Structures are given as C-alpha cells and as structure tokens.
Amino acid sequence: MKPKKTRRQFLEDLSRTGVAIAGTTAASSIATEAMSEWLGLNQAEASPLKPSPMVPHTARLYTWGNGNVGGLANGSTTNRSWPNHVPSSWTIVAGGQNDPMNNTAAGVMADGTSFGIRSDGSLWAWGNNSDGELGLGATTPAKVSSPVQVSGSLSWVSVSGGLRYAAGVTTTGRLYTWGFNAYGQLGQGNTTSLSTPTQVGALTTWQKVACAGATTAGIHTNGNLFTWGLNNYGEIGDGTRGSSNKKSSPVQIAGSWKDISGGDEHFVAIQTDGSLWAWGYGGNGQIGNGAASTNNMTPVKIGALSWVQCAAGMYNSYAIRTDGTLWAWGSGQFGALGPNNPTLADVTSPIQIAGSWSMIAAGTFDVTYTASAIKTTAAGIRSDGTLWVWGYGEFGQTGNGTATITNSSPIQVPGKWSYVSVGPGWVLGIRS
Image 1 (spheres, helix red, strand yellow):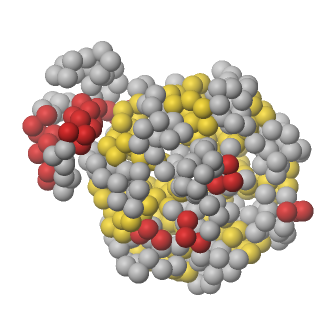
Image 2 (image 1 turned 120 degrees about the horizontal axis):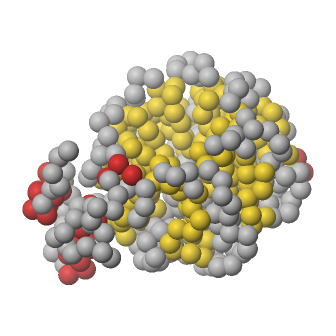
C-alpha cells in the first residue's frame, strides 16, 4: 500500500492538475479543510497531522456544490466548491432532482434529495422531506443535512430520486417507492403519497430503477422494461401522451433492456444488443435523432452503433460507446455538451467529448421552467479513474475551488474515483 501523501505533496499535486488556490482568508480556510479531507482525516477525532483509520479511500464519499437544502450531507447548508468528506463506507450514490414549482423564490431551490447505499447494503438519504421522500415514515423533519437511514432493515442494490420521490431495488429483487405521488409515479395503482418505502407489486426480479421528473422506469433481470407516472410528452413510451394518460401502474415497453437514465422529462436507454434509444420531451434535441421534436411517444433509436452506459441531464443526453468514447447531445447551455460545442447551441445528434471514459452522470439545477434555465452539470470518470466535471458550475460543482457558471471544457477533480452522480446543483463521488 502506498504511504499517505504529505500536505506539501498534496498541494504540489493540485498545482500540477491546474487547480489554483486563491490567497484569500476564506479560500485558504476552505482549502485547508479540503486538504484535510483529501488526506483521509477524520477531523472530529484526529488532529490535522494525524491520519484517521476510519475508512479506506476505496469507500469514501465526497460531495461538493450547492448546500442549500442539505444536499452535501455534511451537516451544513453552505455551498462548497471543494470535495467534502461524508463519513462511512459507500458503494452507490444517487443525486436526485429538484422541482422548480416548489421553489420559494426565483433562483432559490427549496427541495432536492440525494441517496446513498453503504457497503453493508443499508440505504441513507439527506436533503428535503416535504413529501416523505427521505423514507422515514413521516414528513418531519422537513429537511436534513446529514445522512439518515431510510426506514426498514432492507438491503439495497439500486436507487434513484425524482421530483420529491424515490425508488429503489433491494438485493432480493423487490422494487420499493416512496414520496410524492400526484402523477402515479410510485407505481402503486393510485396517487397517494407515501413516506415509507412500499413494495411495487410482488415480483422479485427487478434489477435497476430510474426516475425522470415524475416518471419512473424499472428493468427486470430478464430485460423487460416497465414505466409509469407522468406522461405529458410521451415519457411512458407506450404511444400515448398528455396529462390524462398518466399511468399509476407499470406499463411494459417492448424490447430487451440493460441500462436506463431519466432526465427532466425524457429517458435515454440501452437495449441488451447495445442499441441506444430515447423518448419523451425532445424540444432541445435530447432524443438524438437529428430533430428537435417535442413529443416522442415511443422509443427512438439513435444511430446504429453499440453503447454500454447512458445518462440524462435536464434537456440533454450522454452515452458511452463500447470503445470508451463519450458522446453528448441536446441543450448546450452552460457548456453541458463539452468543448466541441463552443456556441453553447442545441445539438440534435451526438457529438464527441474527447477521452476514454468508463462512467457518465448528469444532473440539473432547475429553478424555472424556461428555456434560459436549462442548467445541467455533467460528470464523468475516465478509464484511468480520473474524475472530470463540466457544464453549469455556479455553486462550485466543478470541485476545484471555483464557482464558474459556464464550463465548456471538462475540469479534473483530483484523485481516483469509482462512482459519480450529480444532484440538483451538487456532485457526489466515491473514491477508488
């Protein structure tokens, strides 16, 4: 095992990656705190020079960006532009989404919840709880800024957060949902909100779940895909659309599927043959078929190549091919599509973001339903384990000590990483 780096070595590493530490008192304080965390110190139990034996780097969770609703899980509501260590050992995180209709004022986010699965399989949540989305069995407390365990003694393998609700899959293949349910997005056959995880049906063959605003999708172990919830733009994918066509029970979508991700009002998914598909709202080109069509009521195939992983932002989409190349399309605002889109325009077909990649994630800070508010932050892990962030960065989502709104070029977050997710204004990453 390699020895821990000294503070001097850490600063030298930051310098080599192009990270500048401003010489202000505030910046110095933030940098000192961040350095302690990067060195793997438990500041509550260890002195600044004494390493803590708490958790190996391979399981450490870090968060940074918007702290307004407690999304950084650090006991504070203060924004952070440096990675912040969240104690315990983690394997999976899910950033969640926020509902602009629930904001208290223009540009002030009032909700947003994130989730994490620990190494022991337990599920934890933090952030807003106005509709029971923390899964505590009650809508109080209204907000938490530190992880709280989701009710029940279940062991989890997949979790996703939507607009004030969540869905998760257990190790036994059971699917559970909880939170806001006005559109049937909990899949319980009704529109009653729930503050405790409640099983959807009786099947034990679920393996993955994804939320897209107020629409939910789940994949079974045999590749069958089901969707339910809001259907304004064809998000269900069954050929129908409109508020009167919302579905409160799962509806099967033809095909055999292996991966799916939800944006604000659209899905992007990969079938078991490697083909890439998208459906739902496509007004900014996020469907990826060369057009900007608003309603896409059935899955639309994107090209003829083979893909391995996908992610959906607010009004944009991302996917990694089998050769490790990363591609993006949809809204280009705030640099969300990378450096090959310098005009920040909408793009209706995939364009490449240079590098060899192993994972991609995207999330949004949605303050109003307007064309000028398409604020997607994207984060990806390259094949060498390095983490890069680009797009909207007003709250420090790029993780380099700055808070630049538009970032067209990916910015490296020091360290090696195994998992990343993006919430509404914040980023969550697990070190490798």
